[in-house]
Length: 336
Image (cartoon, rainbow, N blue to C red; front, side, top):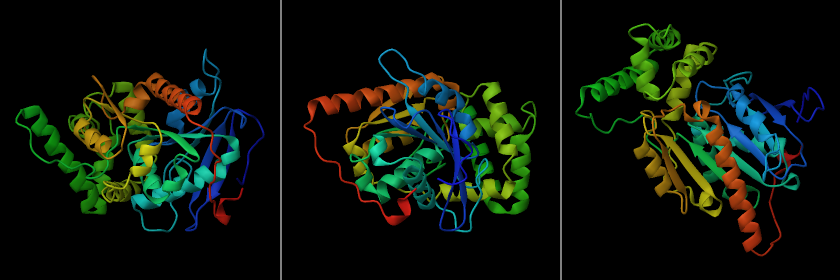
């Protein structure tokens, strides 16, 4: 990694530069000698900062679970990372995650557990589709929160109850507004980042994230979104629609994979999570009551517990499977 800001165990910040010139800001927390490294990939309009409570918990030792190493990064165009010059699609974000993974850790550091939320979960899927050889040989467990395998934001039917109809209509307005023109994108951006008491703001947030988010969480989301230019928000929304990994996720079946979704999530609803689980052999699916799209940020303890469950699965596999040599081909660009 370059531009390392310090040598403390608690945080090592660096920048990974992609082929198209994007500068991805990466943070590493904890000791490289930890039993495993957890790489957390955030969602659309969020940043690495959203993982702070998770990182604090994961890097502290607990009974039965030693302190782990945690790596977070700002997706391109988000947080402190730059946009780069390449056309945006989800495959590109998968390649970004590949770079972050190979620059922030090595196979010699130990196994890696990947955690992705929403767009971050799609980045993990794209990595699995493009680099299946990483899974089982290096990546040893995956947790996917509130994400889908394809058809992002699709509304396959209009539900009968009026509240659901209004939310579906608002969701279409958000999508159309972001994709139609720069002027519409700016208008939707102003509504989403405006006061939550505005009569038009709340329905839009509910359309995107369901009725699960608490007011404080929604306010934090609006603040994070305010820092991203409207056209970048729109561009990434369009990129999300290119996500299509159905039939391409066999590599995730080689490692313990856990899928969690909020029961009230309307952006990547439980039906989408079920389709995702159907594409990953052996994956487990858990639907969390009374939660929407912001599940991992409102329930950070659930994320930590899921990581610990993956670590337990990994230990169990080690105990019951004969040791085999680990072989992993890394290209020359993977050198630190």
